[in-house]
Image (tube, rainbow, N blue to C red; front, side, top):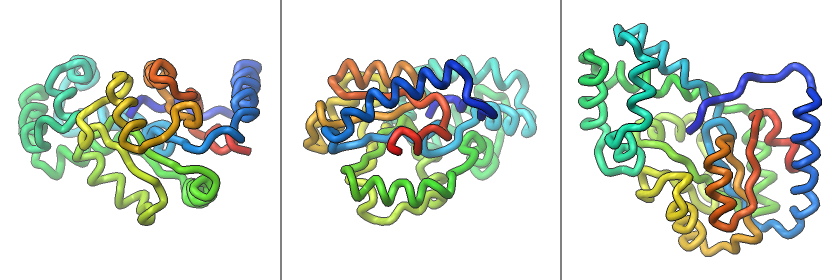
Length: 226
């Protein structure tokens, strides 16, 4: 999951240009059979600073600086591809933060970045599932999954499949991640569109042969398919 973007109050010239690009994609939507959604910044609101502040409130000093180091660390990568369990991750993080948070307190802080799930998503995804095969592909982890799935409460069969990095062992934007999804789902790349808020993930999808759109504002998601 990537950092969220601030909401906008008006349609600027830059955003109008983005909409023009999206209309270009809409011309090809009759050829699209599959849609792959990212989670954070696309279906869920995401605010990394909420987690930073939550940990600071629990006594972690220089939390932002430490998070910058953690995001590029090997143990964080291993956690997101399911190679280490939550228990080991919490212990490692407590050591890095020089605190001794309970599992409950740690998870509360860790999940604070997942800010909201718009109620409009329920109807939107139901309508999408009638027009396309829809999928999720997210860089995530066991702690987040256990938190956000009950919030979203997706019905069985809504998504053709949900691909979480900690379950499939691959992470975006690695080429192997997209290839795994395409092969496992048995879908045609040329008839598939991927939607993500991070430029590197969009580029990775395009490199893998998928059509891809960067969602700069979560509110724009519904406009893409108008």
